[in-house]
Image 1 (cartoon, rainbow, N blue to C red):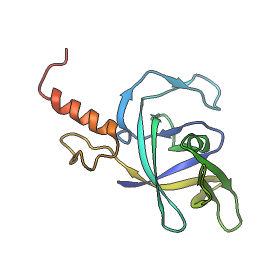
Image 2: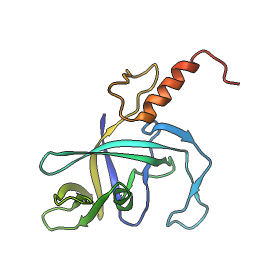
Image 3: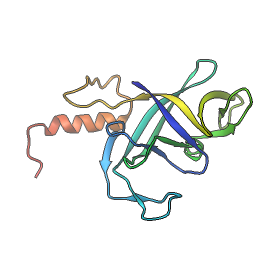
Image 4: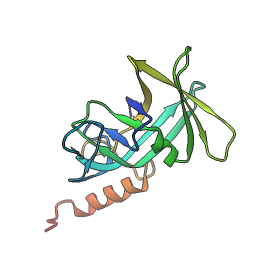
Length: 168
């Protein structure tokens, strides 16, 4: 795991990392995405799953898994869309308060609101998360009992079955 900061973007619709090796089971792609910048569309390097925990002001960890996150190395920072949180089944409010900006989150169908403090830099807010990095065969230890996602298990199983074999 490592601590990471994601820009809170209320206008975007996805979750993006600008760092290589943070996605679980990345799939290289030649897809592009549109941004507010004029000019050509931005290339997406890979799509995969980002796994992280938000930490509330009460110390509660909220585990989140974004199965269609993108890796865009041309971006200057990681980005997290409030719409992506809504897609995960949360109601979200981005609160700009004199005492400090925060995300108010509530799982749809529940009554408990969680307050996630934000780090404000200039006029931009960032959520501090614990990012769970993927297991990399031969580099990090892997145990199917502690795997974060079923997709991670399937990918590592496939790697182990094909190790030393030609796939052509």
